[in-house]
Image (tube, rainbow, N blue to C red; front, side):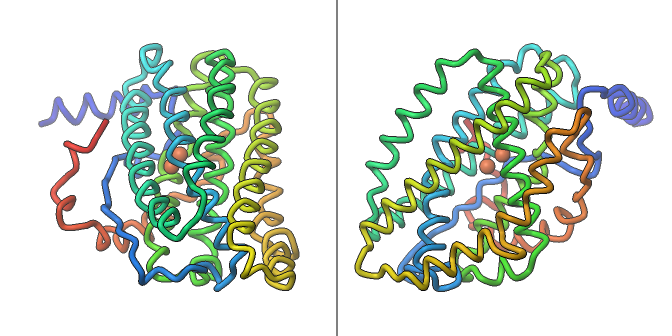
Length: 301
Ligand SMILES: [Fe+2]
Ligand SMILES: [Fe+2]
């Protein structure tokens, strides 16, 4: 017992590669969320614009997260640090679960008549082109997109008004995803640093990834709004845009955190929000479907 503890402490002390706090455990958990007719068509603040935009983000996740997994997995064998190695395993498992849960949500969006198949095809073309970049550049893209996901996750957990705007049938999925994005927010970044990623690559690809994410999300949102043109309202769209980009808006308020990535020596855990994980984790456990409560090994990739 004593020797196991000593070995554990040595591992912790020796980890130069990972700065993830020791109270954060990166572990995959299948949830088994289901989406049925109880989900309102406009589940976010009763707004067609905002609901379509979040649906658009959800359509991006399964393939996007597979890209993240592949880009980190490509360097898995080069990681010697045992703590970071374990975190990479956790990261891969968590992103695989996110893909599965968002596929369920996307099926629901598809069933509501949205052109999800077409959007997925377009996304596959974009990601196919991205996969032609050098491996380390792909990892820089993942690190940048993980930075943006972590910013949004932090805001979702931090701001009650954002979670309260979501219908109760959707809130658990997004809160669970936000918790796990917070837990593994530094994994891709730490791997990128370990394999010699440079400041120029990191910052260039933040700008590149932000533009790409902005274009894809806007395009998908427009596609869904066109499909749902009967419900289009200038008032709803204008107030949705204000909610995103106006005073205290969900995106405008993230600009300082976004800029933080340009700071030389930046690390995702410079902003230690591990208490948010602790605060929401217990509550989210109550949403695990019965078949996944005793573990989910079979579903891990
Ligand atoms: Fe994710
Ligand atoms: Fe992630």
